[in-house]
Length: 278
Image (cartoon, rainbow, N blue to C red; front, side):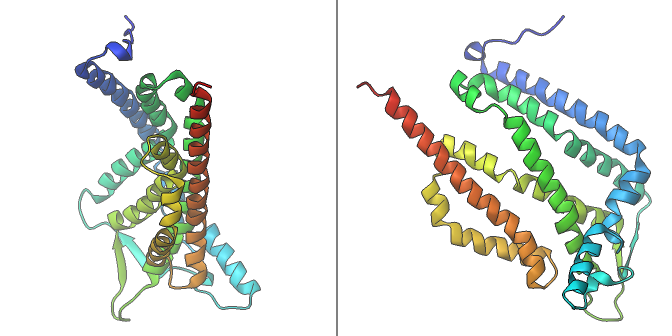
């Protein structure tokens, strides 16, 4: 028998927890199903996707090499191979990496459905006008997330791997990275950028609840610029071009967030003005 959805206005705290539990169960079930598919596609997931940035034939390296060659500069991106090896030092290392990589793949691919379940839980507590104005939330949030994932995979991850894989404190020290360390570098770049690209959505809702204003964002814009440049310097090779490549999209997102916050404030002020009696 189908479960009847209760009126949000009549639900107790325990009812809300029960409703949340079912949304979490369905989200987890979807992630697990996708993870099983990713587990069965081991060759593609690891050889093509995960280990792609460890080869100098990766598109990002070729692009940067072509740019450097066109400008007449020598570049480390034109090397034949990266001077490091990847190895597993524990008995269960490869199997554990296979399991967890499949789960993270399930989360990334299933992100739109996870958002859908989250939205189904939140939306009954919103006014009809708020739900109407939030149409397209799942589409926009998913698009931004996948753009961030692509940016992390094709820009941040290869730049980080290239820099850390070629960095040496001495010629007698060889870079032999553990499998889990390498995968965590790729995963962190992809997930972090995916979530970072949700900044406009986050600012939209923070502005709606009154926690953020355009003036606040403009006031701390210089501080945000410095923070972004510091982060870019940490995760990219030590050259200005790479830092700019990483920093520019984030700064653009920050500027877009300011306009979104201003739009929300202006729209709410206009609605409040129309609601006031003449």
